[in-house]
Length: 197
Image (cartoon, rainbow, N blue to C red; front, side, top):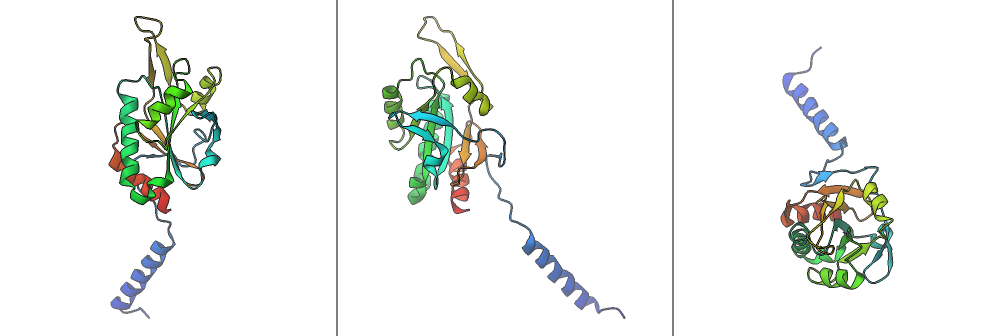
């Protein structure tokens, strides 16, 4: 005995709804989803106030971490400006964002210089530094490229480096990699999704 066509369609529709209800919603991000990556999993560094810092210090916040140097003419200030703008776009949730800037230029980036540099973007942002002998291992653990490029004088060198930002969720898990130039609106949108999860 076959079921009437209308009944069969109703059963198929109900089954489709049940299956759809059982599948997990997949978030769509503007940044590159690197959830579960075996790199960029954490750090143990000192901030510009002399305080030791790890990811655990920022639990409950989304963390955006960027490697750069204070004498960078374009990429670094642009990235930090976009991060400050993303914080503004978050509105009241902006207090749940921690911006971190990791110096790749320990020769020139003193704590006082880094503190002043962060204040020009957002006073809540922190600059972090590693000892010169620790920096290569840290960069490797983030798959981050950097290289000193000599200038006309010993102190006028520049630094080539990767130009993306790493984004952690409020539980301290690595989630996204934002390429340079993706913009503050795209970053803020992703941060809102991570804060709402």
